[in-house]
Image (cartoon, rainbow, N blue to C red; front, side, top):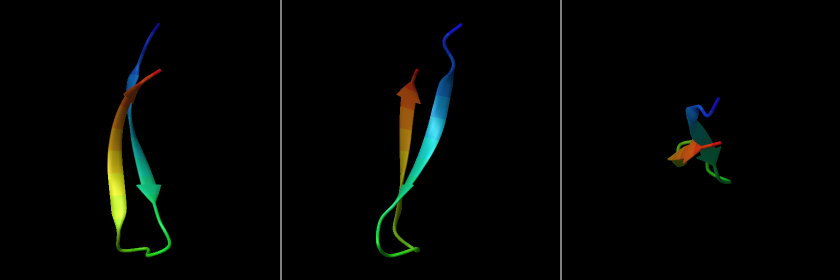
Length: 24
């Protein structure tokens, strides 16, 4: 079954994170 999941991708700065919504 395919589940959508939120991925938190953080860069060099710990306070700067990007939320990615991907379906795997």
